[in-house]
Length: 215
Image 1 (cartoon, helix red, strand yellow):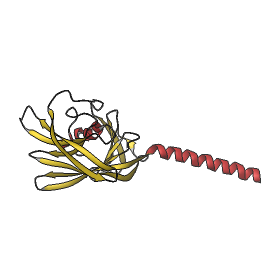
Image 2 (cartoon, helix red, strand yellow):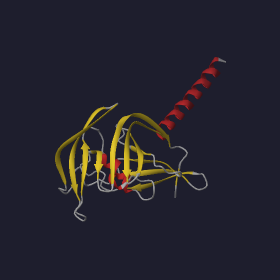
Image 3 (cartoon, helix red, strand yellow):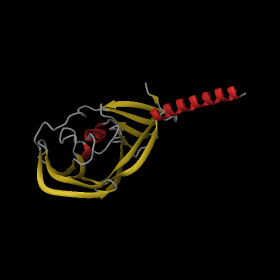
Image 4 (cartoon, one colour):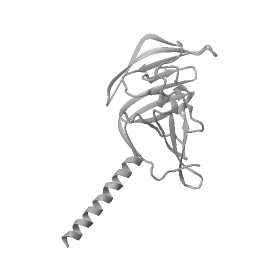
């Protein structure tokens, strides 16, 4: 009897360990969050981008009924988790180039003698001011960038280069314009402004197991 109970206990234990291992692979966790305020004309919105400094991944939750989340990785692959018109959970991938680029290949970014500081649960984040010139339009925008946040900022900026509606505003398209360790704190242009209001501890978990790769 005791042997049967012991065998049953071992089987249940192995099953639970296997289930935990499987769930740990499909459950993505992001302990921190970037919270941006975006103003364009008379419209104001908030953008939340979650960050896992250990894995280097970022997760964006767009304001879209069909797209549940988009996960960006250091290899330039962005996995989009969505629900189709039949209610089925699907996923598909897009690739963004130049994610690993460390420094801009032009000198259009010029430092100015200004700084800005935000304070949150991660402490004070100090940013330096820059101007960014655009050769085609002769326009000059003002940016505040910080190197205090650990991670590859190009992954965050890559969300702006995705095809479809589940993408960040064009103001985030800074790949090749800034270094990959410079995170956007504030962006001021003629057309819009983007401001980081918080980089904080705000855990977010997303379960990917039910999503099937779209062929």
